[in-house]
Image (cartoon, rainbow, N blue to C red; front, side, top):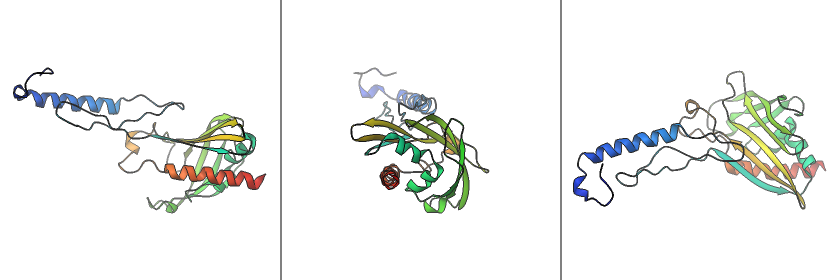
Length: 214
């Protein structure tokens, strides 16, 4: 292997060997990356070469967190985000059409959301139902959930809210994480399903909804 400082004329066939090793290393990094926790974001997307013998690992976000301070107490906000009717009321994507079931009150609680994927216009899935299963729960502070349906299992992505009381209201964080989705479910161009802008818009509708209920 050529050492730093040696002339470029000595590269020859060794450069091809270096490139092969670089590509192998980049593949290992992309397929054996650490898993993301709720407190961190892992970002990676294979390797991109900037010059011979060097590999840069560009980033691909696999988690969104968007925030907004809402001028109401956490309990009022939690009532909306833990209720299936609240999910439908604040949805900015247009996919959530109706709901069945009772509000989540503990881990494992479920309810059903009636969906219409035509609102996104990305895949011809039409109308279908998903079961929302609560995967994280702390009353008035934190809730996460995953979705599944008759034709598809839960594949590892989840949504949620974290509520932190602050002066003048509640600091609300909306979470959307797809870092645990297996690569077989990630053909190019399919993730994220919901944009960061849509999550931000949903927070705005959440504030309006809580205000109307107060």
